[in-house]
Amino acid sequence: MPKCQACQDEVDEVLRFKMNGKMRRLCEVCVEIAEEEAEISDGAYSAMKDMMEYKGR
Picture 1 (cartoon, rainbow, N blue to C red):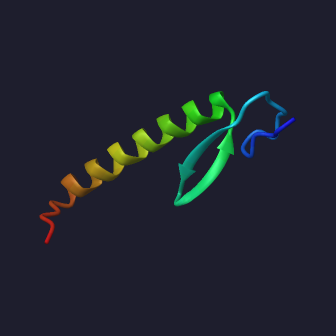
Picture 2 (cartoon, rainbow, N blue to C red; picture 1 turned 180 degrees about the vertical axis):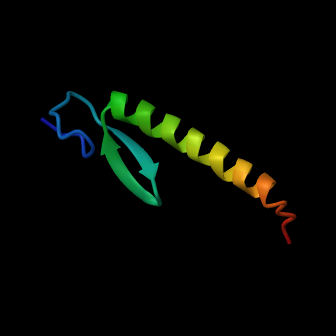
């Protein structure tokens, strides 16, 4: 049985998810958690850019 690379649990099916530029095989629960963390991280990065008055190039 395949193992999730994040939680190391044996699962019936693993999903491929790109995380930090690398493809990882994760279970459904870990994919949901990773997507939520990525969304929060993007929001924090955007807020930081707004606070620093980043104008871009």
